[in-house]
Each structure stands twice: as C-alpha cells, then as structure tokens.
Length: 140
Image (cartoon, rainbow, N blue to C red):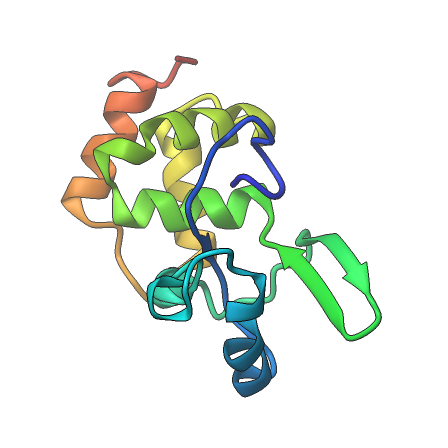
C-alpha cells in the first residue's frame, strides 16, 4: 500500500514475494537500521493471500540493475485485503475501491471472485464488503 497507493502511509514492514528467494532474504537485513536480530522489515506473510492468476495491471515501482520491485494492481490488493477482512484494513479497502472505481458490494465481490476463483468469499469478507458499501447496490 505504502509503495504504490498511499505515499503518506507510515509502515514498519513490507509484505512481499521474493524472486529469487534466497538472495533477497540474505540481503534484506542490509537495508535495516536495527540490529540484524530485530530486522523484520521485509516479510512474506501476505504471500498466502496472493492470487495465482496473472496480474496484468501490476505496476513497476522501482527498477535498478539487479532489483525490480513490482506492486500488485489495486484490484489484486483489494481482493487480498477483502479476503483477510481485518478491521484495520477498512481504510485501505475504501481507498482501493476509490482507485478502482467500485460502487457496490457486488462489484467488490466480483473482484474477489476474479482473483480467487477457486476460493469462495467467506461470510466475514462478504459482511465487511457490505458494511463498506452499505447493504444496497449504491455507492458508499
């Protein structure tokens, strides 16, 4: 979110998927100002929520010889955050919905189904989305 969609956001860590895995994990502590034993700024915890579908709208946020950083598209991040359905992600969901142009819970549910077609939307996720958009089919 902070790298691609909310520059004013303060974050303590970056959720990522690394390719190739080994070298990134090995070198990540060099980017940390804290002692190596407390350096957890780069993690893969969000990896379980990443869709296996190609994200054609992902964007490059940094490119340097030997390092390319891509950010998932707003729709992909929306689907991931909707699947987790944490209260603390409501503001992110609202911001992403505005970026994408979502106006209803049904549109939001469709984004979730597109990115995770093999996983039904949980009742909790659906409830969060209907709360976000209201129970009707109109904009927030």
